[in-house]
Image (tube, rainbow, N blue to C red; front, side):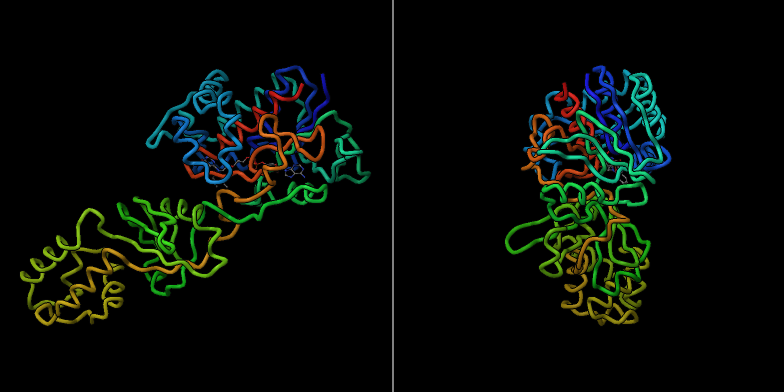
Length: 411
Ligand SMILES: Cc1cc2nc3c(=O)[nH]c(=O)nc-3n(C[C@H](O)[C@H](O)[C@H](O)COP(=O)(O)OP(=O)(O)OC[C@H]3O[C@@H](n4cnc5c(N)ncnc54)[C@H](O)[C@@H]3O)c2cc1C
């Protein structure tokens, strides 16, 4: 049996610790925070969407970066295996809309609780408030770690697992330490950027609709002849631009393009109504209200904070009487309704991002073991790797899968 050190007590580190402890290894899990699972605690708005009860195809459709790297991990750790595993540990679970799996209690701390119980059961030694400073590497092999304490204590190990997370929500402890240390030892770090986050927009008028949430709309983001993103659902205007489920997904697929300049997107406020039908509706509405102000009349079609924006963009004064509205002006209203143009300038920062895109290049990690190809006995798992997925429980599924593969490979 080996002495194994795991750095990072998040989802991946804890899961890996449980699996290695179960095999009888002497495992030490080191976490710099005062408690385990600080990020897990805030996942799924405190409810922890811990996986997605989907098919293999759907899982891989939702992995944005390097899905192929996970092909080997999948069969031994499917989403269904994860649900079964947590159930066997005593967590009651439920599956909601979009196959999202949650603890039945709706409390993320119940997920953390079962993980902590299993760590204890499998005799994993947990060191809290303990920060790792460096790795000990000799002739291309891992020998241990150095602690960030007064005497720089060295702890020897036969294998070290790095599970130090990405760079998003740095307040939870994932601040990029793992990236820096692995870079120092020769690993390539693929450019890191925030993902699953809001998008900044340069359109000043969007802020006037701050707080307005739109349901059942379409957001389309073309680039040349390609469509970078098209989705239907919910979004919201904010002081910086746009956010909400549609926008988070859009950020994952457009993030890498903003360095080339702003990107234009289009919101269809009424995707279920064709332009022709909308025109017919407007004509009918206008016919019934010929002597009224247009701002008053179209209030029945749009949220109140949007009426003035639509009219301003269409170049129509709010107090214009309906009988004076021209066909071209009606067409302009239709354009604003079916393809409201927005200009996105970039993703929000790491403090607000659910996930980090980028990380340790998977080319330098063996997919069947998670072992570094550069340093023998060093394993890299979880969000620290250049892997990321859409919302829906897929990112935690990646953390469990990579942890499971790593634990399976260490003998
Ligand atoms: C607000 C929010 C909501 C989310 N909701 C969901 C969701 O519902 N479903 C989903 O699938 N995903 C969700 N995610 C993403 C998911 O939480 C992460 O992908 C996942 O937690 C990554 O796990 P990890 O173990 O790789 O890293 P982390 O959970 O970040 O753990 C890394 C740990 O390493 C520790 N560490 C770092 N450096 C050192 C050091 N030098 N010494 C000691 N310890 C160190 C850190 O303190 C930290 O505890 C969410 C993320 C956020 C921010």
